[in-house]
Image 1: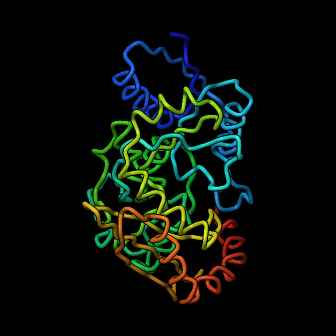
Image 2: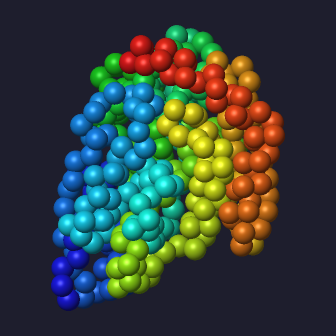
Length: 314
């Protein structure tokens, strides 16, 4: 069999996720050979806080362009980095089994969020996490932090930050789950849409590769992220607008949790709706309509100035 070329970022987490996907593919197709090509993206080069960059797909654009041009056969991404408006030539051909979508607190003192001293400096790369932290503990100092997962953890161990909030899935995939002090419940600290999921992208007309990738698809994970992405597309959330959404399915039922907050954290809209796991897109749109009817669009308006202020802290 010919060698299949796989595009990914060069970070430890990106490579670990790619190896996870390839492990499952090798099991399903024992004769297949894969070659990993590492591709640098705008998000790897530009170290400004993510929400200050007015661009979609900063961690995937260059890699997906390589797929589109035929330089690689498929690409492995963190699903939350993949915008919903992919090139029509490309398709998310596969969503393997999703890992935990939860956010977690990391520090080297074993202190949970409620135990952190007033004035403690907490780092996060996400506006969504920042506003939920400030709502839970207004007495903390929350500051943007960039860098790959292990760099951010080192900044806590070195004392630059008292704690940080990260995705549990990323820490687990690179073998660093021992630094986790507290796992936040998804109904209290709502994750980013697609968090914990992997997206494998290939050319829409490459039916052979699509067929190979579909062999490791997890239908439940696909349904959950379909609901979350339908919601975010309708509400038009993005890095500049902190929208939390996570779908949890059990048997034929799916519950979709969503949250949006005002820039100062004083106003928030939280919703939880249960529907059929067989119609995830319908559920996502229904929850989006609920958020919009409760004033989600108005909350979004106040964020432009807040982002500029937040950027000054970075």
